[in-house]
Length: 372
Ligand SMILES: [Zn+2]
Image (cartoon, rainbow, N blue to C red; front, side, top):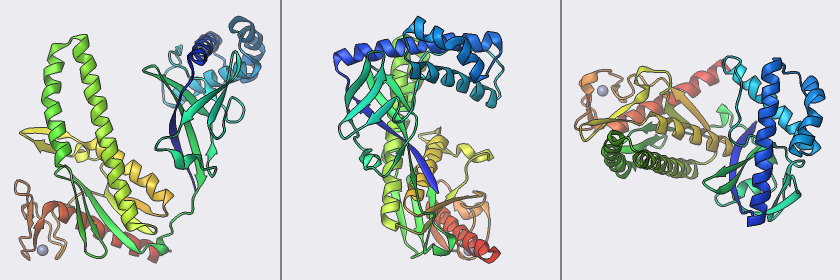
C-alpha cells in the first residue's frame, strides 16, 4: 500500500535569489495566463496543438526555458481539466498565484542541505529547513511534483512524498480502541483491556468560546483591520486544533502500536455531522476539527501498521454497553452521566460512547473474519 503525504518545508533564499525567484514566478504566471487565454479562445485542450502554437511564443515573449514552457502548458491544461472534473463550466481561468509545478529531479532536486530549482537565471541552490518533517527526508520516500509557495514573504516548498507501507490485516489485529470525540474530553478512549483514557479538551473549549465573542464583535465592525484580525484568529484556532489533533493521534499510535484497530464515529453526511457543543449558552460547531482528527489518525495508522474504521454514530451515546438497552433517557447530557434505565449501569457519558465504539470494532472484526 502506498501512502502520500505533503511535506511542507521552508526555504531560505538570499535577497538576490528572491529577486530571481520573483522574476521567474512573475513570468511564469504571465505565461500561464497567456496559455490559458489560448486554451479558452480556441476551446482546445490538445497538448500537441497548444505546444505547436505557443511553445516558441512562450520562450521568446517571457524568456522561459524549454522545460518551463512545457511545464506551463501542462499546468494550464491540467487546471482546465480539473475544473471540468469538478463540474465547473468552461470559463477563462485566471492564474493569480504561482501554479508552476516543479517536477522532481528535473525542475528541482534536494540534496543534504540545498534545494536546487530551475530559474530564468539558471539553477539556484537554496538552503532549506525540514523542521518537524525530518523523517520524510531520510531517503526512503519518493518525491513527487512539488509546488513553490510564497506566503507572507516567506518561501515554502510543498512536496508530495510517497512510501510503500505494509497493510495491517484484519487477522493480525490484537487491540481494538474506541475513540469518541467530544469537547469536554477531546477524545475519550476505551480499549480491549477495559482501560479508559480521557484527553482533556477544556482548555481548547474555553479558548474557542472566548474567541467566539471576540469574533462577533469584530464581524460587526466591518473594517479592514477587523477583517484582518478575524482572519488571524481563524488561523490561530486552526493551528491549535491542528496541534492538538497531532498530539492526541500521536499519543494513541505510540500507546497502542502496530496491529491496532481504531474505531471512530462517521460524522460525514449525517444530520448531526456538525456535532454541536454547548459552550456558555452558545453552540460551537466542531465538525471540521473532528474530520481533521480522522484524517490525521488515518494516515498515521497506515504508516504504523494500524487501521481506522468509521461506524454509524447513531445510538452510540444512548446504548447501554452492558445490556444493550437503547434509550435517550439513559444519558443525562447536562450532568455528563449515563445511567441505564434497564440494568442501572452507570458511567461518564463520553466513556459510554467510547465503549460502544469499541464494541462496534469487535463486531466488525468478527463479521469480516467470518466472511473471509
Ligand atoms: Zn443496561
